[in-house]
Image (cartoon, rainbow, N blue to C red; front, top):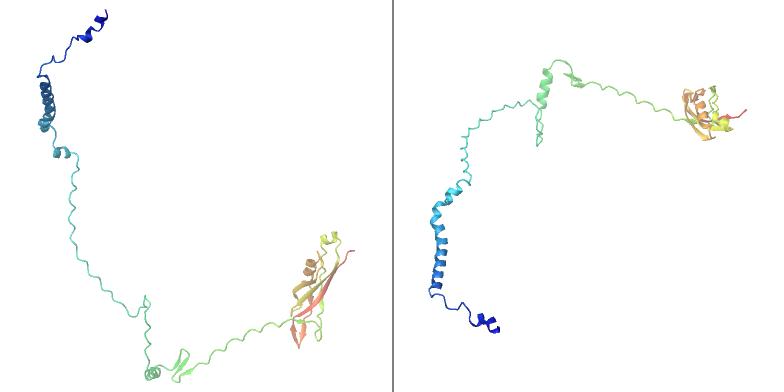
Length: 239
């Protein structure tokens, strides 16, 4: 039994060297013929494929047409000659200032003698005398400066008095007192300016409004009315 188990190894059914000698060369020849056929057949069928110019004819764009020839140039018309009137004022500023022509005195004398007698532009022709100039109007006199009432200047007399209006807020707050004002009296006796010298809260404006309505007699200095500065008082008292 063990002998038959290893019988195929000891005596195999297929033995090496049973093939014929021409098997290998014939196989190489057949493979070579197959490779040559795969190379030669595409080359023989190359006339079936489209050539390069035929294939690119549908791909490339047609060349653009050549540009049209330039139009012939017409000769430019000659510029019209413009005549310049020498009497017209120039538009452009001159680069240099030409000297004025000199007038001969003899020619001027002859022209004046030939002109008719009479006045021409303020000059009497024939005698060449200038007309008298018009006198200038006199300059306005500056207003006289106000003078302060004192030695030699008597205070003006009051001819119109207006009582001040006691402010209601000052009455409610029980505010009273005397406001001192420096007043400037014009040449006509009216109060032209007033300012507070001593103030009392809530009463200053009422005092100013009353003083500006007062009227005085004009003050004379050397026989001429002058404005004066004087001090006035306005008193406020609760009843």
